[in-house]
Image (cartoon, rainbow, N blue to C red):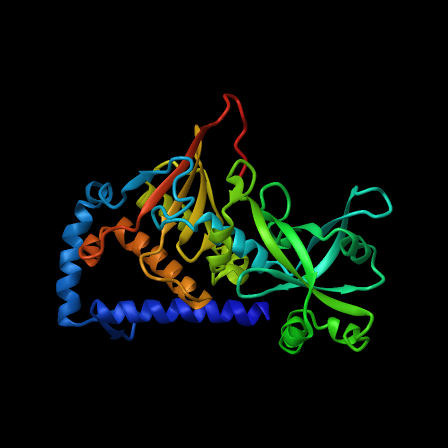
Length: 355
């Protein structure tokens, strides 16, 4: 599966590059292996040569960095970052299991945590299949106020995003059962056997009353208005984002250095890596000899699928390469992508830099 996926990604890169080459005047390959240019291509080449002579001067105009201020874009702000509601909904949607906390009957209401599988309905309400004999079922039958903690395994630890839903739970009526069974088994195939014991298991729906979202270590940690959560849509590339980030970070430090130089204006990058990716753009953490920065580079186009995201990433890498090599005229009608700086942290004196 990994080999096939990597092969598909390479084919996409090759296809987009060939389309680009055709659009700018390359029409074939000579007997010696070099590309043959059309008349239009020759004219473009001469223009590029002139542009390349002033590449260092023109490159300084290829980035415009906006400062991000704490609290900005947490509601309906500038669309360079997912809203808090979208980020919380994405976390809960990406997970399929969570930690259910009920009030223990045995221990006078002490919080009792247990593992549960769930799916979400259209309003982001978790639906769980619980065994009648389980301790958490006995607890919620006595006191139906609960919380559900969700954190995707791909972003575990203090640096990972997570969400806690607060609310109450009720047993699902039989009217809704047929449709629920199909969706639940599709997400949790092992539940099919449990559902053959109709009287031993029941579906419960959580009515979400509040949401607490943590974006990661030192990032957003706040309550999310419930209407922002229930009306939000999960990020469409969330399930593929981790694989795309891994590919980007393994593609080579030169590509990352070029993105930082061209779009962020950093000339002395020591190391750089993509830390998150969504439909609006990618976040890059950059280390120089003196500072650590975090930037967001936004996509120009709407991203609705993982294929769109791959295409957008290839375009960014291609644009950075062409701008660095003096081919600014190819992008004269396309202003640089929006770039936002989240923070800057000075490195402690004497601290070692490690690759």
